[in-house]
Image 1: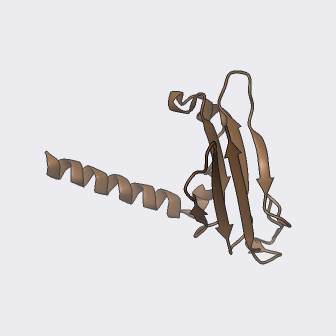
Image 2: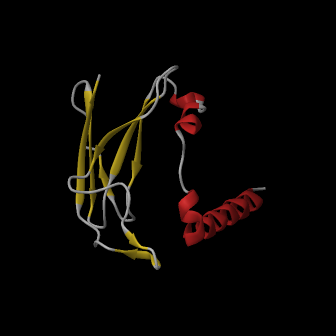
Length: 130
């Protein structure tokens, strides 16, 4: 039984790697506010969605009284941070965006994977208080 479970986990990990490694699937890698809202465990919680390049660093120092600080750093491009209030009647809102960055990339039409501007270094500081 344990070997079968190990094999299933290994197979799922391989399928997930193949799915995320396929550049054709990149445009489909997103989650909607409705997706987050439909998960009961997120109700009445603060949910923060982050869109960042590979190798982005996330540091969460020890919480202070009534607040949590999150540091997000990237040397490979912009960081987008969204606050998703998961309550009835609320919609998501963008909290902040890396200084001097844009959430959309400028690309050459004849070379869709070639960016006009090289990736910029981004850093976000987010503090949440009760």
